[in-house]
Image 1 (cartoon, rainbow, N blue to C red):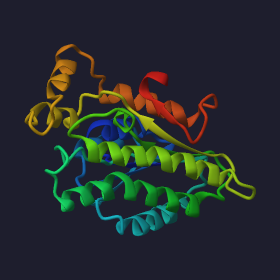
Image 2 (image 1 turned 180 degrees about the horizontal axis):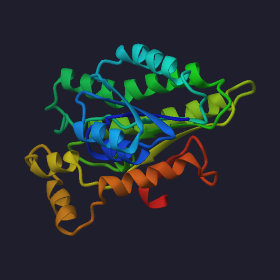
Image 3 (image 1 turned 90 degrees about the horizontal axis):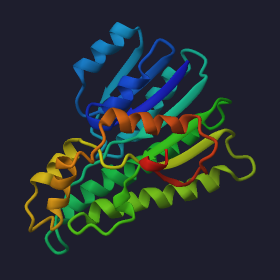
Length: 252
């Protein structure tokens, strides 16, 4: 049985990942604030196991409880693969330096950075010794490497993801560390999701490059969530991409 943990599972790339992973030989643990009835029905139609955890991951303290519950379920059938895809994130707060509230900054930092780090820590602790292929994919962004006025908080959290992934992979590769565990930071590229819609609707005083986001939609530059999810899934079996690295959609 393959076991897949997907956060931010009800919309966008997360929902597309869940849809593609559902099947009779897989158990998908979906985590999001809301449940997708469509995906629940799809799992029933396909004869797949979909376990939904309606949780708000902006509170990192729920991570230990969540992962402990999942670990108990993973023992129900022998595992052939275990993966974690930490996709939950928010683009807000959007605005220039000096305009953002401390509370909004802290909320984004918790959801976008602290929670993925905590999920990875628990994943390694709970499943590191399980003798099957294991993959941790933390969703990053090209914004981690590009100056984008108005998105400094989002960019900083995604840059933090990249740094954590590089360090965490080096740690698990030390003598005595878990075998067959690869950790990646993956950017899905420009995807037509609610996040892009938010950017297109934001006032230019908060997002000076807003017209770029509108142009990308008009020019057909955006990929679909299904296309992005399909590319991300290739990391399950790729051995030509260095673990611990940041990999972009275009390179998959």
